[in-house]
Every structure is written in C-alpha cells, then in structure tokens.
Length: 320
Image (cartoon, rainbow, N blue to C red):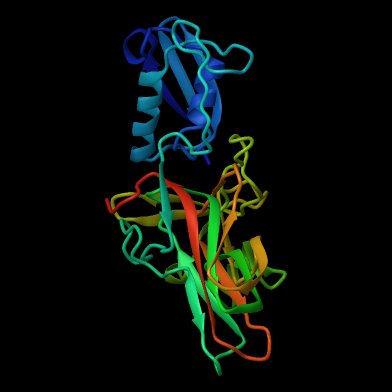
C-alpha cells in the first residue's frame, strides 16, 4: 500500500474557502471512502490530503464531493453545528450516503449491479428432509456499499426449532503444491509464503474477503488482513494481488467455510409471530462475505417455515 496525495485549492474547492482539518478528516472517514486518511496538511491556499492508499476513480469522486461540501466550521463539544452555530442532531443509524432498504432477498453475485434478485432468506422444512438445513445469501457490496442494522423473523408451526444467522466467507479452492506463495494456516486461512508455500491457488479460484473498517474508529479495520488488491470498477474485477504479511491488508482468503460472526441464535415456537431483532448499531457487510442461515428441526420431525427480513442501508437500493 502506498500513501497517495490529493491536492486542492482551499479558496476554490471548498464551500466557504476555509478548512478545519480535524472536521474534514472525520467527514472523509464517515463517507463512502474505504481507504483511511494518513494526514491532512494546509499551506496557504493549498490543501493536501494524504490517503493510506490510492483511491479508485469512484472514491476520488467521493473525496472531491466531501471537500466541496466542507465548510470549515469547527466542532463544538464534538457536535455538528450549522453555519450560524446551531446544533445539528442526526437521530439515525443510517450512514451518510446510503438508503434504507428492507429486504428478504440477496443479490445475484454474477451480476455486479444486481440488487435484490438473489437467494431469499426463508426456508420451509418438510417431513423427511434433513433435520439441519442451510440457506445462503450474498450481497454485491464492492460497488454498492452495504450496512446491516436489524432484522425481523416470521415463522409458522415451529416446535422449539432453532435458527442461527452467521456471517461466513466465500471459499478459496486450493490444491497441494510446492514452492508457491500461499500457505494455509489452521486449515482455513490463506496466508502469504515466501516462495516456499505448499498451497497452489489459481487466480480464478481466489475469493477475496474484505475486512471492513471499524464502525467505531474508521481509521482502523475490524481485524487483520493478509492480502491487498486493486479493484477495477471498469472490469468489475480485482488486479495486482500483493501480500500483507504483517496483517495490515484489506482482504483475507479462506480455504474453508468458518464462522466470522454469529449475529442471531434463536429458538422458535408456535406460529404467525413477528420478532423484531432491534438494535441501533450498524455493521458493514464486506466483499466476499455471505449470510448463512442454519435451521435445525427438533424431533419428532414436523413441517415448519421461517422468513427473515433485514433492515439494510445501501449506497444503491435499486439496480444501477
């Protein structure tokens, strides 16, 4: 990753011809830009924003917009104020630049601009089917930044049956090899090797799983990542895979399906119920992540069904 500088004119490129660097950095960190800020400098009329990595053309446009909207008004007691110093109150968990969308459907992962035409978050169990069943749901988030807030469950004729909703990664397939640049740690995590690796991975089998930025501190990621890559908006593909052996990368690759996070683990009974899994928190859905519903039927075997609705905040709430 290379620090990249973006230069602006304070008098011409900002709203009021002045800059508060602390406020501007926070505005960038809470925008749709996924790259962290290294530092911001001013010298006369020159504004220099140093990003920890080069921005894509799309994110460069976001940065131009943030700078254009920046009015240079400082924060008062960590609160936002208007130009005439009136307190601004934002009573919503929705990240700026996104739309709220309630959905029971994922996206089609083979169509990058698809919104809502993928697998559904529901299942009907019939007698004689496996007592443990799985439902997978994918979202296209690399060009449609997506946050999940809360969920709702509706079910019928459940008899203390169990539903788990977990976040799992797309899986990278590998074959045994020698003198490669990949190893598999713990049987599940693909890590860099210095030409002495034992895992052979072809480019078409690589599944990069993004480590999202920390919602509480957007300057850091939620966990270690051992790979970096450049995403090309024009081709909708990744290029220039590089190793991040210190764990400071943007992506991981997983050789096995493991649970990244369990977000719901509930027992259902009865029918025609609506359960609101309410929270004011939001979590960003990273590229390469999948929702996995695990549905366990309690014996004796019986018919039952369940449907999940998610409250999401998305950059685009319809096909684009």
